[in-house]
Length: 154
Image 1: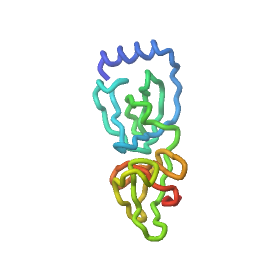
Image 2: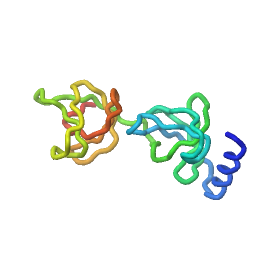
Image 3: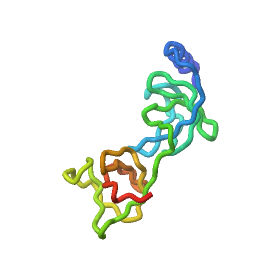
């Protein structure tokens, strides 16, 4: 981190009044499947590297919605907090009841548009639940959409 970025992030941290506490978080960025680790707490800072979904990180402090983290290989940088979670995520296998096509939809219900057809056996990551519907990210394509709960097997 350059001197200017260090001074700005230090000042912002002191102004935030948040104590530094080490904790464990995981990357959870359903859209891209990765996050950009940055040199400071904001999109205007330099990208250091990409970190993939599910990667375990150590968190130290936060400034606004940005969290200072360390990767397993020791790289330290800033991650956007809404793309981090306290758990690794939940993964499922897509199954077909009655050998029908499995429609990935753009909302939680049959009235929503089909955005893809999935094959039995594909793996997905759970993002959100809504009644009998699950918002998922398809691991092979990164596509995000909704599936019926009945089409997911632990």
